[in-house]
Image (cartoon, rainbow, N blue to C red; front, side):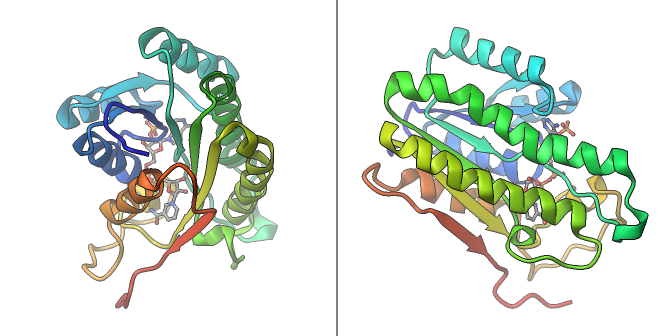
Length: 235
Ligand SMILES: NC(=O)c1ccc[n+]([C@@H]2O[C@H](COP(=O)([O-])OP(=O)(O)OC[C@H]3O[C@@H](n4cnc5c(N)ncnc54)[C@H](OP(=O)(O)O)[C@@H]3O)[C@@H](O)[C@H]2O)c1
């Protein structure tokens, strides 16, 4: 799809991968709309990037309804949803806190489902659309202390396949992207200590480029799943 004048909603767009994606979409002529919960951070990011914003918590059904009401009233259409909002919770099985486990599923799984569900009526009306689900290499293999986070990203892969089966007949492309480690606030937002900057590891722009490339492919085809590694990361 040619991104010129297309309307693209990026959840979790106030920083990191989502914000870099919105900036790249704008460079391609798209109307990028970023979303996040913290309105102050979201507004500041949107103003600095010159993109639109819609505040809301993807895990909250009423909030998602309000997001789509704004999209319908203000733009009247949606060409792509980038389901990017998410964070990690890492703990060994025997120490998992139930509330934290349920909260990470609420954002990464229920949130992605609510956002995709809200987009379907618009996509069906237009007979076109795109959903880019941002999973992780944690959605391709499990690891110690990964029960919660890997669980959410494996679930996202399963939902991707179901949505694809349902929506292809409506010309909706559903794509799964699995980044490996990307240097963002993810580590800190997942309750771990910040890591020093490492030139050899991935940047948000690398994933933004992957998302934009997947969207820019001619509509007759689509990439089902893409995994992005750093070429030769040094520790
Ligand atoms: N960084 C990595 O190494 C890495 C690797 C693989 C996959 N990923 C995935 O990439 C995605 C983006 O991560 P990132 O690295 O860019 O993280 P980040 O820098 O921590 O940004 C996360 C964004 O999500 C928003 N967010 C979190 N929960 C939300 C909710 N319930 N509703 C709406 N917005 C919400 C945050 O804003 P508010 O807090 O204001 O809501 C923020 O804008 C996530 O799905 C993550 O799992 C990241």
